[in-house]
Length: 56
Image (cartoon, rainbow, N blue to C red; front, side, top):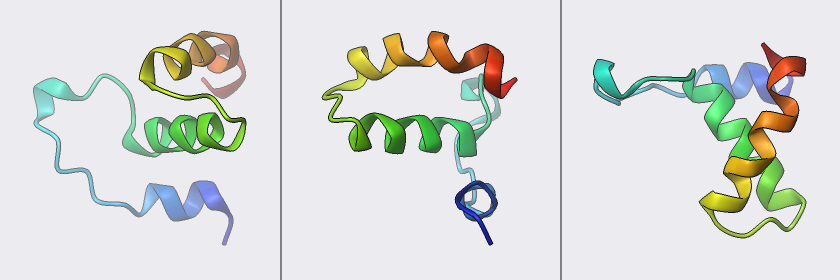
């Protein structure tokens, strides 16, 4: 089982109105940000648009 499959099994307890993106994608981007030494959510937020077309 790969990482994406593992992340897709994490239960999403967010309110339905707060779900803009799939939880597995949010977790994956956080993990990628941490692995590339990006610190903080603002920096990770700038990383996401660069990968959006590849993941959607």
